[in-house]
Length: 168
Image (tube, rainbow, N blue to C red):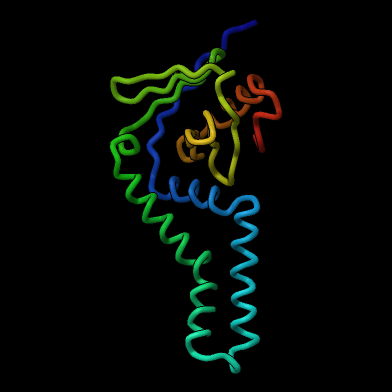
């Protein structure tokens, strides 16, 4: 089998990248469905019972309607803003993809991750997420993968079975 050239990308995440990732995790699955139903029910009750409710009940319904549609995204953005200021995020990280796995390096430190040690790879709108486990992941926004995105996706399809990759 022919040895392919490694694919090297430099990753510097932005606040927006971190926020998108947080929003994805906060609004996926049953939790996201609950948030939508809760907010929609609050808006429905607010509109249909406006004239028969007291001011305090109206305020409560407004707070409920805004909780998952405005406040939670705002809080997640503030969290992403704080996280983006940490050295681990501010310093450029280099990821090198090859036949053996991924070499992650930042500053003087480096870590080799074999393909079999990657938990799963998922793709959301404009970002690829490489999960090592349920807590640790590497984010690869399309803005940093550029024209190498197709080659990375091809390597992931080649090295990971379908059950460990989603939307790749």
